[in-house]
Length: 569
Image 1 (cartoon, rainbow, N blue to C red):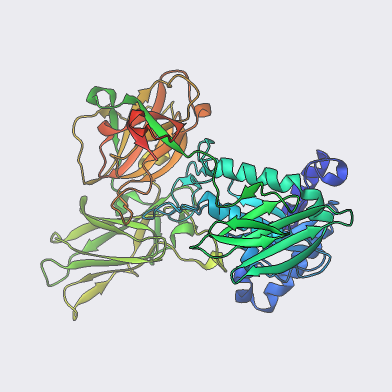
Image 2: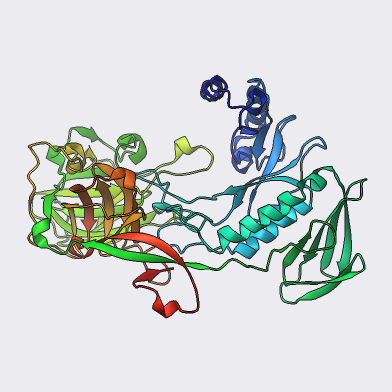
């Protein structure tokens, strides 16, 4: 860690980027929310915090270092707040010579497969930013101000490909109104009185049962006031400096001269906007598609063998989401149709017996393991059992991540409670990844060993492990480009050899909808024409119903009915 941190700091110094060199970097961060797991390491945890702080400060950047959500950050490192309500939750700097910093103001929250978007209102964000400043906050940083895309396999466990799409600037960089405009007005109001906020003396006093004021005054008479109404339901009129001020429910008014209100956190003047999704191309012609059928790995195909169930992450080394567990089994059971029972700490499992798919299951973000029980029909003599274990991202946080176990935990065949055959210590064969991944079928120039065939029959609702390929031209203009994959099941998509991320349409939220159906295709990935689109479909999807679209936004006026359709808010 010291080597890594030193390398980054030296790169910044070489470019003259620190404020002490005349550059733009005013703060550096060491560690991130380590206190969440510090207790798990006992004395070593607190010793590590001391070491990390001393190491960072010793690099002599000439700008302060911060530790986020670390109340015991050693001097001179500044302890900072992360969250949505730091004006209420932050216990303050742990030393009088440190400023109050809010390093992550969560404008939304990450979204998981099976979950719905977290919508945080412009009014709520503005209220808590203003409250933090009123309570002597010196710095607010938004996480995220601009959403983004987890391209490829970079999402963590169960996190959708889009990231913080509800930020003031969405996944594509388009305005989320009124959030963006309301915060812009807030920032201007605070900036207009920043000198007094920094140099004035703060006072706090009550204006009513649930109302209060924070006032900053300079010796020269300059004055700034924040009038706060904590009542969530009622408008309240308060008296301040011999004037009446009506405060909206759960709001703060900013008075840069202690007389005139220039901003109220609950009074939104910015017009809301709506997202317009415009279809540019469909892919409904069977003649435009080719397919490549991946294979079900069998024991005899494998070279990696073990007399135990291997942990998945250490076996795949993160080169693939997929790991085949294969077994050749002699049928010595007394019952005709035993039950295959497996327990998995991965995210998805598909079971095959003698090349026939018999069923699958998956977990979710909040449940770290799942079971699958399926009746099986075994042949007399030898049988092939193949289980495809799938990860949908790596663990994102927690103590002792190197000890985390993923993959199959237990596999057995049951005839009854009295008779079962535990398969854990049989000789298992393993294959990392799918054959199509090894052959890199998603690349534009692929091996001659790959036999693409004309698309003929699509097996809906079947686990087929099929690759689909077609081409498309780039839509005219500058609007962001997306693929609507709502007709697909689960898999990954590539454009011109670059992965635009995983998709999991079949994992519905509580309202019965996919957590994400539109997938961003950056124009930087595209050529003018003949762009290659490759889909890996685990099963259940129909590529003929996908579409290529562009995204734009327009103000949401009363004449909503005149807007072009289809639309998506």
